[in-house]
Length: 261
Length: 99
Image (cartoon, rainbow over all chains, first blue to last red):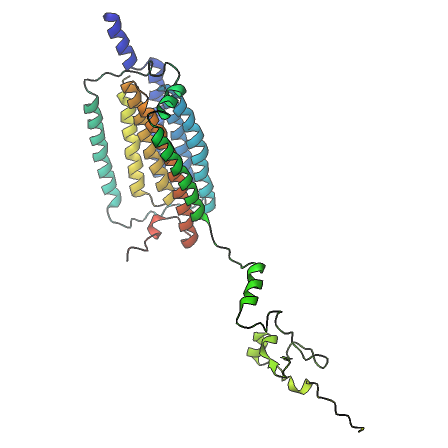
């Protein structure tokens, strides 16, 4: 009987090394979290958050959650923090906060609300745990932590697992849609198609070049169209606006009259 | 050491994250504070799993991690889109709906 009682107590309370680890790492984590609030630059916040996440991974491993500890390192400190730093580089590393309060008294109110919430949570934790003793994971982890989690995941929680996989695909698609921007320049293919689909086919082969063929080919002389009228589109709009434009009629080829007959 | 100290740490981290969401202006920092809150919840889940002696809490924590990863992907895409349209990642500048 005494042995059994002793075993329960030993499972409920943590061993000394874990306590030492906790009392070293937990204050550091809290300090890093406070630093996250107080430092000005976003990159420093990101580094402090990475430190908190690594600390939490160590705690998970200490709490018999080996799988979660490793997933924490791989997913959070590896993927998520890398993504954060990547976006910080994209948005501008030295983008720092403005310290002007837009809503008056917002900071004081937030701190007061936070104190209230901390008090509430603390009292709730204290009240929830009173009279209960911890069981410990020795029996649940008897086949290994990964095997135990896999057994739950693929039997009891298999539906949630499938839904989460659908969520992952949806999130990836959503990110692609959000990050996609239309091309700023129309492609050559689009331009050529648009030329043929226009109201008239007269400019399909391109605009007429300036100058009257064989008589004058300066850029300030409008070209003559087959019907003899000058084409305004053949010279630059700037020249036309400046008035630096010649009349093309004098350079027009006159039909030669046979004088001998 | 009692297991409840982990829960107290989790509560403290959660509160600090909530304060960060309330007072910081940079959208990315706000987002990181949300991540801190999610991590604090995970610590509570893992501790409760150990407290009750079954692995359901760890499975819940695992799902939280997956959902947090999705949230980061979509949220950061939204921040990038916001930055592209108004050249700023400050939450104060996203006030188009105010007036």
